[in-house]
Image 1 (cartoon, protein in one colour):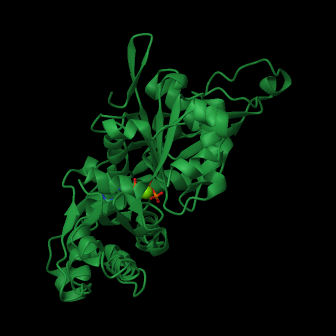
Image 2 (cartoon, rainbow, N blue to C red; image 1 turned 30 degrees about the vertical axis):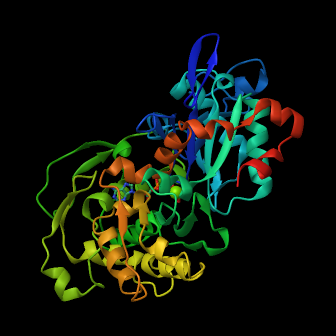
Length: 425
Ligand SMILES: Nc1ncnc2c1ncn2[C@@H]1O[C@H](COP(=O)(O)OP(=O)(O)OP(=O)(O)O)[C@@H](O)[C@H]1O
Ligand SMILES: [Mg+2]
């Protein structure tokens, strides 16, 4: 049997969920990539008055029906990318962990009904979690999955361990750079060494913040695509000529900020580059510029700014990726350091900023003890890199020997939610 159970002769596969601040990755075990990447944000709007007065009425316009008829919930790109009256965007994640369980359940409902399109009771579920997830939150998730979703089996694995598996290693020093943080996590024989995890707040969101400050200081209009009705072609560096969409309402600040963030993330992915050596104004001006056009139609070349912004991920003395990697390895037993240095796995969406792994390699090499050999493992494919933990979960949940690891519904019923503390390290 490989990651699937038999129900009335039908073979039904396990599901893998990998939650992050940027997105939730959802899909079937054994597949190469998640079925969907859902933004980790939910649009919440008060339901119209009629619905409030009539508790039987179902909200119609939203793609997820709500238990509380006082609100409507909007999930996934197609729904979030349009302005809506009174819609506020909210995150259910905090510090790498699930914080708002009600909103989180909305995303799970959506995942089953729109992405998986199958009943939750048929699929074992493997979830990833951050290395510092708390006991009470792990138990809560276990409870929700068994009680609300009636899953036949459940398991929880640290995302860094999964990213190591995805890169073919059971022992590795995993450097995961996501939206809200970058972490260095030692993994030994598939288990995270929790007391040597080192975390820095320098991630993709910090780049967005810095890029926004810079672009605004340059006077660049960041009006996002869904707010633009039409635009004209203008010459490089000329003021943009566009008309804004006419709306009968003012979109919320949370929605506008989210859409501006999307705009800047695109800029960041196209334009930014980490230089191989610490930022040097003169060297940066000699490297080719990249041309970029904003949704408003404004466009120009970006030269040294490309490097200056990206440098933010490395220039901080105690928080740069190379520094936290070396610190984490240094906190581990001296016997296992050679194994960690010889398998430095780079994962997470933000590690795709051009030049990231080269610079990390350079910074970490210079800190590697002389007797050790440093080897960096970074998947070449964008998908493998962004979805490292999900891919590792997909592999793990399909291995034959893993099948005895699941917490079954029966075990849950007999032993309760604390079973997760016993079975999932
Ligand atoms: N090709 C790319 N180039 C540069 N940055 C990218 C690229 N693709 C994704 N990103 C950035 O990666 C970040 C998302 O990474 P990831 O999906 O690993 O985060 P997450 O796990 O959801 O968040 P967190 O780890 O903070 O909980 C975003 O900041 C996004 O802008
Ligand atoms: Mg992450």
